[in-house]
Image (cartoon, rainbow, N blue to C red; front, side):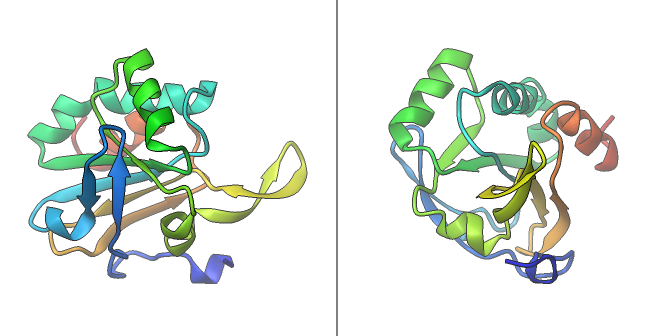
Length: 158
């Protein structure tokens, strides 16, 4: 996917139905009427992804009180996500996309730079979906550390 194909503010958020770490199906369109933060990360239980997931967990009450749901999506299996949730005591909803279909549709899988090399992989990305199912914010290539605090500030919650 090229940068031109990435989701933009105002685009309809592509719907999905994925399995969560607790084995339940989560469908984006079922969350209409609420704001949803959808973030894509490469791999559970790695340092950057753990930091980001813990930051979202630490701020979940603030985000929920402001009307935001948080969904984290990676190619990891539901079983691996369940272990990640248990090990890190995460309270956010983590979803499994092993075929990378949702990652690709949202522009969060493709060519990226990794230690100076061009590789195919998950592009750490965060989106805010408004209550009508439209993209309100689209951020690609976000940093794992400090990203949640920056997002909270941008949403006017800090």
